Amino acid sequence: MSPVKEALRETIEHLSDEDAARLLEVARSLQSSPGGTRTLRRLAADPAFRVPAYPHGFRHVEAIHGTGKDPSQVIEEDRR
Figure 1 (cartoon, rainbow, N blue to C red):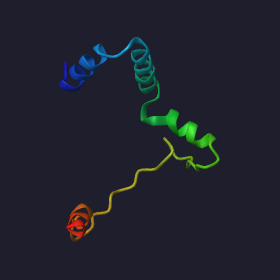
Figure 2: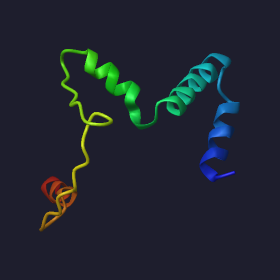
Figure 3: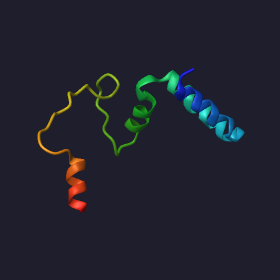
């Protein structure tokens, strides 16, 4: 068993029955709807969000590779 699954199993042993049931529900929803489609359907029903009609809601976009310092480095320097 992978270390992540082993850690999850150990954590589950310490949960209440109610919390374990909620976790089981989440795990089953992950199995039945890969890619977060359940979440996207819920967001699409909310008028505050606009979910595109691409497969799985969004099309794949290549990351932009910038030059210069990482944003985290700039924030660190600004805080000093």
